[in-house]
Image (cartoon, helix red, strand yellow):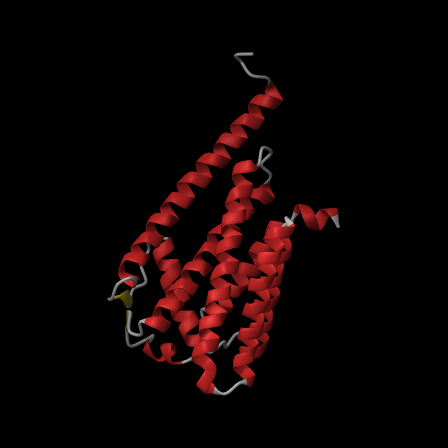
Length: 231
């Protein structure tokens, strides 16, 4: 049990990478829609169990998790006439859960005095969770302002389905966060235009601030082990 606890962020990172791969396929060809959503649900549960330790944080995260899971699975059962409402509920809850998780991970990084390899992997988890939060934000923008993104011929059909929209806008989010761009998917209306630029700024600051914090913590550890030369 202690061994799993020491590797909790490694486990979460593996799950998040697997989810990113699944969500990149608009028709969920890897495992099929139902099994893919089961993996995603399991990963959201891992986020809840691994990231949140305080009871107040867990309460907020549990409400978001339960809401996202119920809305995500309900679209298989309920008529298409309510899909828009389910999308709104699902992506709002996913935004709260993943965004809150990224904030908690960042907070823990700045409170960490002893940095281990698993803590470094935790920062990568925070990066991917932040990408998920921005993706959910773009989903909400597309719900309220359809046509905010211009989608090229190779991606256009994906915007017509539940899973297709997730695949396209997750691609946009990762492209913006890493400053690589999203190629044929381009924001053409505000606030999508400014938010994609802000996500790129956020991505650069995340890497710069986290690396500086980790390097500073490692230097402090080295000085504590070897004895400060000014002591």
